[in-house]
Length: 229
Image (cartoon, rainbow, N blue to C red; front, top):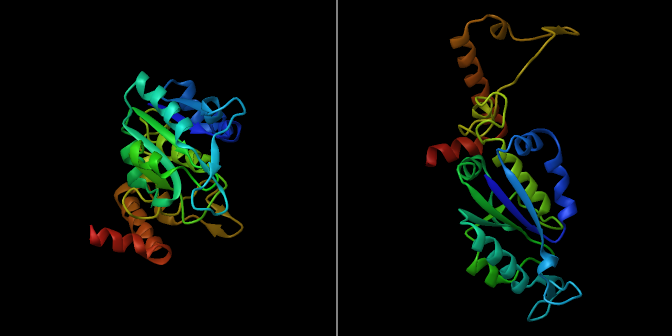
């Protein structure tokens, strides 16, 4: 997979890709991540990439011309499966979306900034818009990092045990069950006996029951979503 991230703050977003699972995926050659500074495509020598919004109002808007230049250059070099815009006024990222994107080959992610981008960018270039929650950040960079993390970890070969991702929360519209490790008893608190029994069918049933119980208590909306599908 190749991911190209267009941003006005490349240094802000690079750090998450230099550690842990994502770094190992890059080192293994399972994913390429490239950062593109929008100011390299500025409309003048002063690095202008934004302007006041027509009709008045507070906040600057990213101009269409620099974004057009950058996207046009990238799409002239290869075909992209999706051109994604990170923005709070979009469908919220979920596990299903991450699963779908993990099967793609080439992605462009455009990070919003200030008051957002000229609407014509969204109409002419963007194929998918994604939010990471019902709140506003200073820019789309942190959201893009979250999106990349949840997608890259699903690529075959990235995780040491590929079945690990299949038991994550939300994969089956349930939260993950409780997990335990050594010691089996700590300050009077013991691990449930079933997990020490070696009876794997019963262990799986216990995990399913606990996942259902946690979901009903914490996120009953997930069960409602399942019923409506």
